[in-house]
Length: 211
Image 1 (cartoon, rainbow, N blue to C red):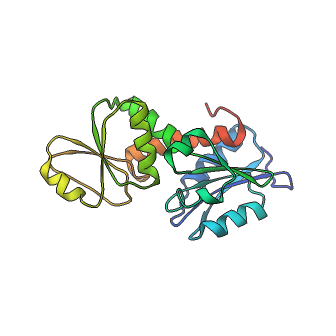
Image 2 (cartoon, rainbow, N blue to C red):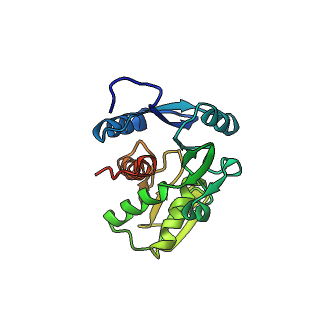
């Protein structure tokens, strides 16, 4: 990768109401490793409409989206791939000549984790947002029975013993009588999902296999 940003340098980024540095570190290191003339930065966004206008105006080549934009962005896209259409949520967008194509790489991150930790029985998924919808789609494709738990999750936790609950919300959830698989980005398992989905994003952005 060129050590100096120039007019040909491709621009990528992530947009959320709580921007962090994980994606910035991963992608800028990946671009350097694979000699891709591109940069990546995270941005704050509380308006998906303004975000879409910005990425078109500034000619972003691709972006990542997190809460709360994964569902609300859909009407603003020109097209979506099969997986994101099934899920009904998008976390990755490619900008090709100002035509926006939506993808969902959370699906691939969750599936890779589920295969590694060998989830085969029924699960309870806490939350029903964009990330939860990706988990639900993975469960369907892996023939894992699942139950969606909403705001009443505390009652469900207190009534169950030795069941698996997947935390697909941004809040801390604990139980003394059940197993909690916490997939928030700041947790051990959540970081694994984030890495796997980022590897998929890198492939979409560059058409290069990360490893």
